[in-house]
Amino acid sequence: MAATARSALLKYLRVPVKPSLPSNPLPFTLLLRRFSEEVRGSFLDKSEVTDRVVSVVKNFQKVEPSKVTPNAHFQNDLGLDSLDTVEIVMALEEEFGFEIPDNEADKISSIDLAVDFIASHPQAK
Amino acid sequence: MASASAAAAAPSKPEVLTLFRSLLRTAREFCDYNVREYVRRRTIDGFRHNKDLADPSAISAAFSDGKSQLEVAKRQAVVYSLYAPEVKSVMELKR
Image (cartoon, rainbow over all chains, first blue to last red):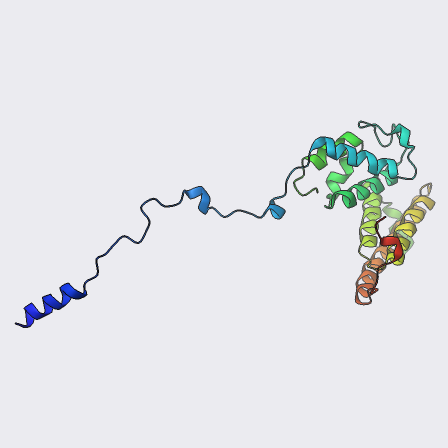
């Protein structure tokens, strides 16, 4: 008697079980965490970088603007010394808003080297 | 004694350029336009003034002076940050 009452009650109370996961889960790639655009950075277009580097160098007071070409060497073509080169690299850091480490900055001795480095650096903006 | 040990180690060119770069980087940290530009100008003028030094002891004396000035500049950048000007200099406005 008690058993039949119990099973009748259970039949009434029992909830049908459904799988809680959707049958077609989201593709795995959508679940991967993405870095924000700002942290990941993006690469600048090389011709834009060239224009901006050339204009920074032209604005440097010791440089004669007419001599500045996209592949000019700071010391051989523009008549600058090593101190001027450091100053130009610092000015480029300000223009592109990121810090160039010392060992990389030492290697930048011409406009095309500067363009190559900045265009390959994701933080340059 | 101090000059003898300084003369023993005249700084190499990369060391001098690193000091120059460090001073310019520290100069950028000043929040006051006038001080920032002064430190930058003073750094550039100081290195230009001494660029023809040939005597190793004079070079290392200038180098150690530059290093102590770098420490001064770093400390002062912190001190000045506590008394930052409330308005920007007119020179900082974008044209």
